[in-house]
Amino acid sequence: MASTIKVDNIEGSTGSTITVPTGQTLTLTDGLAVASLPTVTVAKGGTGIPGGFTAGDVLYATGATTLAKLPKGTAEQILSMNSGATAPEWTSVDVSVGGTGLASFTAGDILYATGATTLAKLAKGTASQSLAMNAGATAPEWVAPASGTLKAFSAMTPKTGRWTQSTGSSWLTVNDGSSDFAVTITPDATTNKILLDVSIGLYVPNNSSYNYGSAFKIYRSISGGAAGYPTEFESVSHGSRQQASWKWGVEGGTHAYQPNFRAMCVDTSHNATTAITYTLHLRGHSSGTYTACFNHNPQSGSTSGGQDANTICNFTAMALA
Image (cartoon, rainbow, N blue to C red; front, side, top):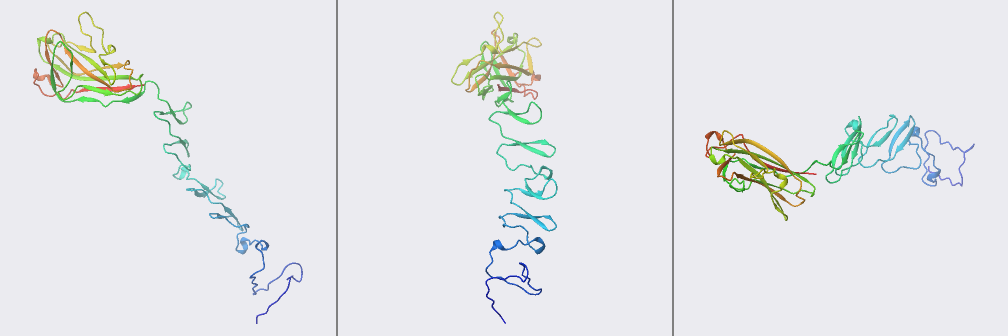
């Protein structure tokens, strides 16, 4: 039988405690403020934590009958034990388990080790900087290129086929029948030094007109500027002898064979940042003409021999700071 009790206050017979007998249930449907309710301990099935939670909080035990809450971590963090192995914490993936220990990166960052289990990041450098070790040899750093380091490289101009040219008392452009033997480079500063490297495979068969050898010069043409033979490429002439970049004489009386002749020179006077084309020129002695055979097999003893597998003509230009 249901009964209703209407009272202003309910008090215990002694003190402030009201006891509900074992086996009985007291149901409260209204009338008590949350603040007046007691905190339910872990032993009673609660958390023992007043005040509520924030979305993402993680509960963990700090003892047999006590709980604590760990606020949520940041994006991509993982839950791991702290260094004392007493409580969980949010961390980045540590190096020891295959991570970096770093929370974020910027495009161009470089990772380097600062210890056996620690990594650091070096922010990207600026244009044309080089990666080097710092003065203490402890970490990498970005530095300006040292003077004399390679700044630019022009694609080489190889000539692998065999060809012949007749030469005499005037300078002529070395050309294999399809294009000049030349190389083009664009320096990035007027002070760049242009290193020129020329390799030539040349054979001249027996010819009395060849008694005084042959000579080569480099012709320079600057886009939007001057063209001609830079004097710094030439050796000093003696008497009636021609000025040239390189010369060689006869072998065995009236013929010559240079399968791998190589020479270098440096252009320091171009004063340009536009395209510069260097072209190889050739001439013989003024007393007659002869046929110069490039990449030619000398065993035939004539100008009609085949390709020499041991020779190649190559022209390379490099810009140095």
